[in-house]
Length: 266
Image (cartoon, rainbow, N blue to C red; front, side):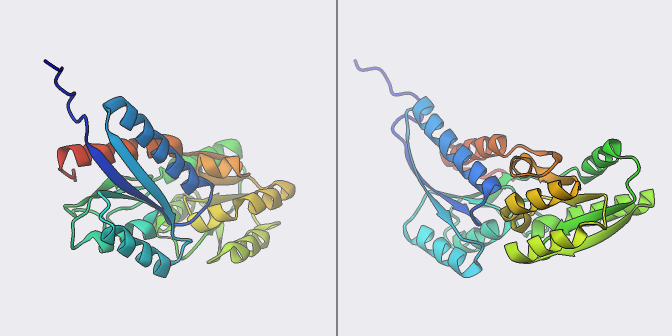
């Protein structure tokens, strides 16, 4: 008699990977998800196909992508970053297509908690740890720049936490914001000569401009502390935040677990 197939052998899944936009952090996650899906397919002797979409940070385009994914009946959606996750969750609400998000700093604030078809892995920061690292590097810091986008939900809580930390230490801070690359670069330039260090959380708008910002701040001798190692690879000074390759691998594994079990964990 022929040997019995291994558990799950012969299963086939089609997965949509949706980046909010293209930049090093989200690209790293998407690449890690794809690589891990390939590895899991080989390990489990199953078929996993996937397609990577980019919403270009455009809510209308993300909505169109969501509609396409649902109409083409993908088995699961892996959205990367908050706006992508919110839009894909809305698109999947009627069909309850599993949504397994990546890199959402505050899932509850984003309205993604306690939904029976949504799960994922957060990249929430330990903001106080980054602030402590900043002061360990330079105990004489007098003024800190807070560089972020007002449109990024990922930045709201960490910026509030950074302000509270600095207030408690009696350290001044100056906020600089922007809604796109050009405005963020202008905001970074506005801090030169005024601050001793700069903090940015896992902000997608800032990350998309980090290659330019990194050069500006390095030339000015201002260390840029950020929320993920991908910022540092693009020019920021230091982080003790998230490794997005590891996060992507975990998300891919969670997505396959959801599809194999038919259950979405809270």
